[in-house]
Amino acid sequence: MTGRVLVVDDILANVKLLEARLSAEYFDVLTAFSGQQPLDILQAERVDVVLLDVMMPAMDGFEVCRRIKSAPKTMHVPVVMVTALDLTVDKVQGLEAGADDFLTKPLDDIALITRVKNLARLKMLNDEMLLRMASGGEVGLLPGLVAEWSKGEGPGRVLLVEDEQRSARRVAATLVGIHQVDVEPHAQAALQRLGATRYDLLIVSLNLADADGLRLCSQTRSLDHARHLPIIVLVHPGDEARLLRALDMGVNDYLTRPVDRNELLARVRTQIKRKRFADHLRGHLEEIVELAVTDPLTGLHNRRYMETHLATLAEQAKVSGRPLSVLFADIDNFKAINDTYGHDAGDNVLREFAKRFRRNTRAIDLACRLGGEEFVIVMPETGPERAFYVAERLRECVAAEPFQANPVTQVRITASVGIATLEGAQDPLEGIRRADRALYAAKREGRNRVVADAA
Image 1 (cartoon, one colour):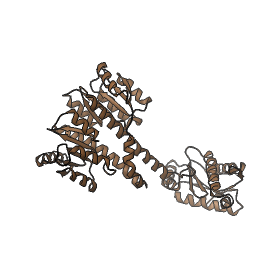
Image 2 (cartoon, rainbow, N blue to C red):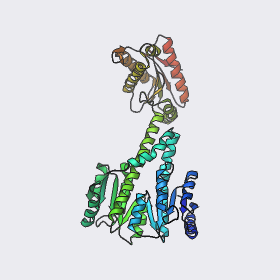
Image 3 (spheres, rainbow, N blue to C red):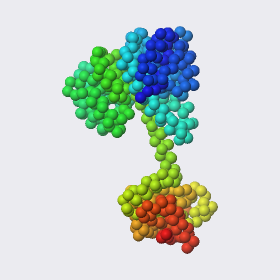
Image 4 (spheres, helix red, strand yellow):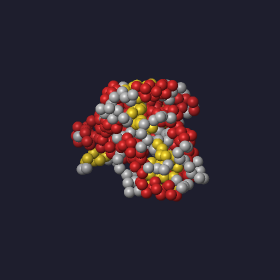
């Protein structure tokens, strides 16, 4: 995969060197030479990763990073701080400013490319969620993302997998008091913990005595509920080969031994914060998808969902050679309920009708509200006799018990039902039209009845 990288450095030679390295890996490279330039570029261009020099005149890299992370449009753009100073205090200051990573000059080519690819991949996943949210009518949500980002601060639950006792005690002692930490020396037991408990972060030693830390990271990514769990690995200096493999498989961050206390706290905080923000985006996206296919009043599928899946069900019926039946139901004289008791009462009747409607469907049936007081059930593997039986049972269920229109008023309602059955390669829309025609026949014949279209 490739992406667009913004390189920011006030020294032309440094910019050209990074541009050449990244271009060789087919990244699209933008360049800036002062603190204000990248801020302007980020407002006008899509950027996947920012490589930001720390030491710049007028506005240093820390201030640029803070401004990037405080703007709704750019806060989720990964920032890698680049400096000639290999001091922990600089790393911690960069992470405090919101930086996602820190690289020291002279840059190692493999580490540079692997880190940029990893961060670009995470950025593209967030971009996809944000785009779908905006496409789903949630544009108004986007300005509030800074507030959601800040909500990610706070204690989390961390699983530390480390079998060297002194190291485990030091790491746990640093985090305890801020986070809840579970220490597990055995990789297999750690997987079982991940299956039973929801964690905010996994920290894995790549130097386990009796297990492969890389394999544990890979197995974690294969668990459905842990696919997006951030992972930090602990590595010894000089173990670049295993570290690069870890980063290449999607590990989020790493710490080199001996682990600095402040750097550990900063990186743990950053990863938990990013996870919570991504969870927030993912949760909103799931809500949008659910709203797109669900009727909000009754909880049944809506017309859009039915139209999308009807052709699939018809094709399955054609392949299997089994019939497909369509049931149309309409509440009789529903307008009178709204006119007499008000629309809130009408909504209560619709909700209760949907509950009774759902009780008369199987797991393989597709129950939908088309709109107003019209409902439909698409019934795979169902012939005309069975469809008529289901329709009659539904009609009786509606008429048998009164509906609670409001806290003090019950009303009795009835329903008219039309059914049609498709055989072979018939057009599924024809089945809808036939069931609708049968429904109107039931209305004409006096309501509160079932009519089957035999055409």
